[in-house]
Length: 297
Image 1 (cartoon, rainbow, N blue to C red):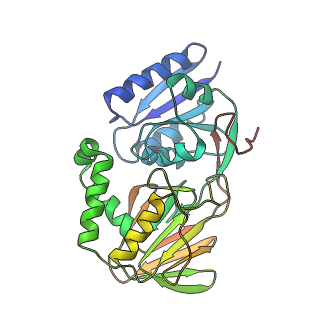
Image 2: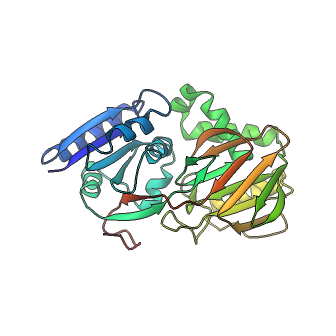
């Protein structure tokens, strides 16, 4: 019998609560399962830290933001499982976690784990990506109205993205990496293959790789932004050009003379400056057996 802690976003929909209840019943047949619901931003991290030594498995039930909070409370000794209840569910896409209550329960009890290396931005862990500029402005605007986010979900991101494109703002970023100084209008530092949902930002990167990749966008205009968007829409990797470069670095410092927002894993972090670092921190993510990445036992 295993002791399983489920940390759940309290604001999930009725249908997701129904699915969670099914998962709870399946897991509870032969295990001791407790559900803890979040009450405010950052609460999932606290719940994880308080309970991590009392349980055998930690489960994050929610979107990428809730999972990020749980990751910030995890260590490398206990396995983490996820129940994807968010808007984009990028981590679930990376790890191939989806399906019925029965399938997700099977993954939680599988004992099949894969190490995920966790970088940080301003000492906050992230598992997917961190960025400064255009998409961080969208995240900031969406999170300023969580009521609208809960109502419109993905549609709100599309609406805000369109408005931000109309009133286009070109941020001036200064980036220090690999002992070089770059100037750009937007930067995305990714630890994952997917971006913004099912779009694939990179075909050579996933959450099971230790390295992080940074995409630097120069001379950003509405037109070339739309070109980048349609490239992602068509599932094509962004190509290097005189307006876009891709770099690998373990330490990236970003600053700006103007107030520029930063986001990590789809959550608003604050404003520049930001320091993004690769770390030795890792978590053991429970994955399905047929995941075509060799699982660590």
